[in-house]
Each structure stands twice: as C-alpha cells, then as structure tokens.
Image (cartoon, rainbow, N blue to C red; front, side):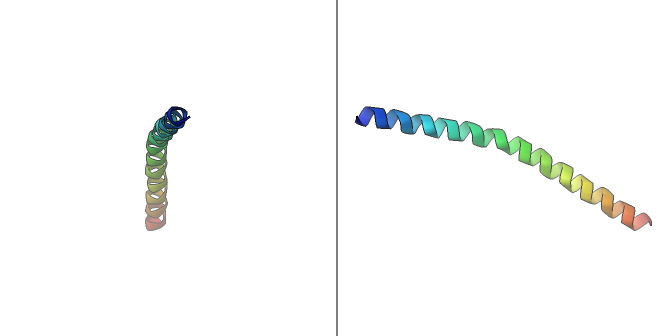
Length: 48
C-alpha cells in the first residue's frame, strides 16, 4: 500500500510541474501583448 501511495504522489508532482511549466510562456506572452496594447493606447492618446 505504501509503495502505491508514493507512486501516485510522484506522478502528481510530475504532472503539476509539467502543466505549471506550460502555463508560464502563455501568461508571459499574454502579459507582453497586454503591455503592448496599453502602450499603443497611451501613444494614441498622446497624439490626439
């Protein structure tokens, strides 16, 4: 029983790590696009 519990815990850790790593580039890209959007909006307001 103990071995089974250890294996499932290891699997959970691995899957959590993988999904966490996958979300970082996406959120990073989203943040950059959001910042660019705000910068462009500010530039438009400045030129008006």
